Length: 53
Image 1: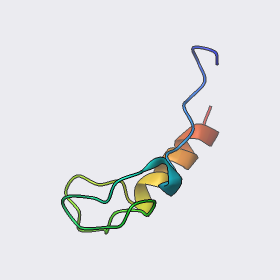
Image 2: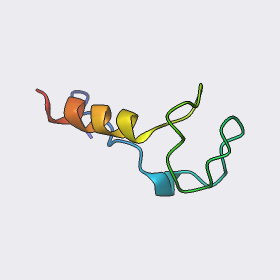
Image 3: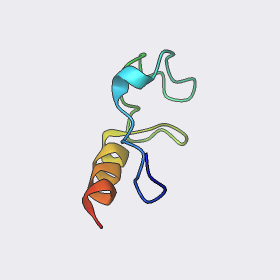
Image 4: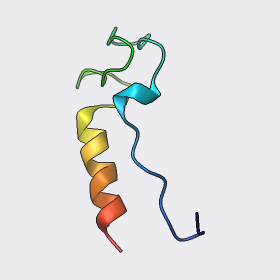
């Protein structure tokens, strides 16, 4: 991996534990109201950033 490349976005299978804040199950995105979780919206934003030069 070069210094200029971005890490791939997180995917639900990256998470082995359920979220302690919102209760989302393991291998799933957090709920939108979660204060500390990784949501589907975060994944979309990461993917967009990865495509932007």
